[in-house]
Image (cartoon, rainbow, N blue to C red; front, side, top):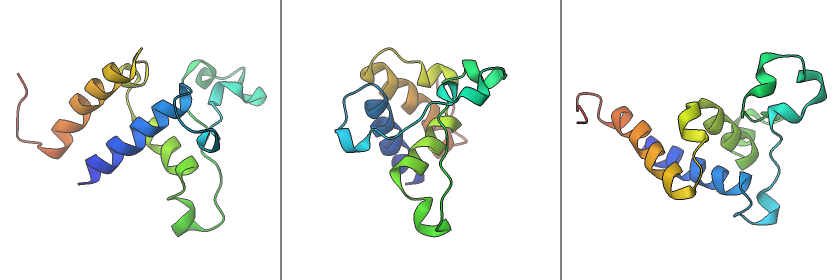
Amino acid sequence: MPERIVFKVAVQTYRTLHGDAPQYLRQFTPVADIPSRQRLRSFTSDGLCILAVRLPTAGRRAFSVAGARVWNALPADVTSAPSLFTFRKRLKLHLFPLSYPGLVLS
């Protein structure tokens, strides 16, 4: 069940970053857009900036925080997918072994 939640949040984050989501969800800041990071290796990454939260329980569940955490935890081959269909396919292939650790995909 946790992987299903991660899947839903990751797909919504992908849609938000690529302009397919509603306007009120577009509150992510890529790490590369922060001026103080331009000299760091993370400048070339496609990670998202995780906002500081005031309330640790409810704040971590906000879409802007949860979406950034889930997105940053994904491997680069998943986040660099050219389309939503490809992203969903790669994400499922990434999450499936986490749900069923003893199962080997062929």
